[in-house]
Image (cartoon, rainbow, N blue to C red; front, top):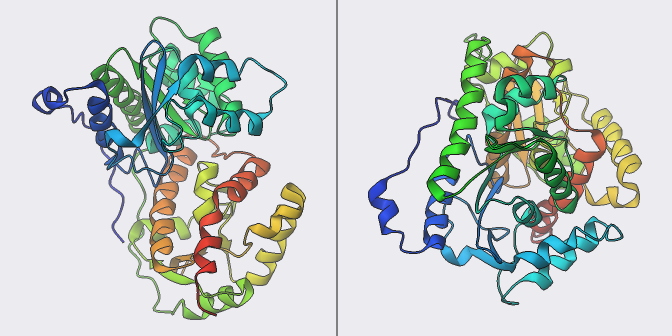
Amino acid sequence: MSEIIMCDMQNLWNDETARECTTPLAMRAWTSRLLGRDRDLVLYGGGNTSWKTTDTLYVKSTGSDLSTVSESDFTALHLAALRSLLDDPALDNAAVMRSIEGCKLDANAPKPSIETLLHAVIPKPWIEHAHADAILAVANVESCVETCAEVFGELAPVVPYRHSGAALARACKAVYETLATENTIGLILAFHGVVAFGRDARESYGNLLRLVNLAESWLKNRGAWQLPEDHVAANAASAEALRERISAVAGFPLSVLIDRSPLAMAWARRPDLAEVATQGPPTPQHAIYTKRLPLIGDDVEGYTSRYRLILERELGAEARLVDATPRIALDPGLGICILGVNPHYAAVAAEIYQHGMAIMTRAAAHGRYRAASLSDISLAELEYGGFERRVLSKLTP
């Protein structure tokens, strides 16, 4: 596994390529791909973009990959109808999200992004949404609001964490209408990421990079950027026994990867590991691959029992839909063991945890690292974690 190397975010705008975009939607797809190709901005579905006219919103469809998105991956919706959905306080989050389908201009168009309403309520024509690592490293601390005010000021006010969908859109609308000024170019979404906007494609894309680079520069100035490394060799112990134990408790076979990089060893050997690593992942969405907590030590059965009780308390009967066995195991001698329902998802979890590890390390270097609430993370595991059940349903017994 390669070590994460994060550097100043480079502006990839190219005038010649921009001139080849003959329509605004072609431009929207191209600049979306500029964002999607950078893992420090977007990880596995963690971002979306839009463009709007006076009466129509074109938003990235759910499930499409921002790094390869094309014009056909954007869904057109009636803008006024979308905005009116939030005007009825009697409609709960689920009802509002169901109603979005009725706002599509083409009933056969792809399902629009879960953040469609967020894009609709911000009165700017071009919008970018990303889960930028550097911004999460600044914001995911106990003093989130104060720290973000210092770093971003009126350029990007903080929106309190809300579940994706109508709740987040309402929160963004309220913050924008009360705190945005003529200098505001974005919003910081607590435990979630960042939104940036502009009058045209170039300005919107540049504004996102401006906010990310402000975060990186601030972290460097606080001595919170350089990631520690531990070059003492890991032992040669096999992770196979651990994989078998976790698989036995889960009731199905799991694949495993081992990260013994200097960065991983430094993380697994942190003296305050039990404090920092157990707050939760940088965003609730990370938990669908890595779980809310890593296993520290080798008590697989105890971990699973405790995790299941927490899920049952937070999710009730639906907790049975979420597997309670660990996907990340931390061992100071071995390194980091990453598990998944197949090799592909083990690799996905490994990359996501690498980024999370860097975010948590940097946040803890300038403040007290914090994650979203237990209930918010549990809900994300339930609502976005169905891929494991789909994979397992295809396994031959």
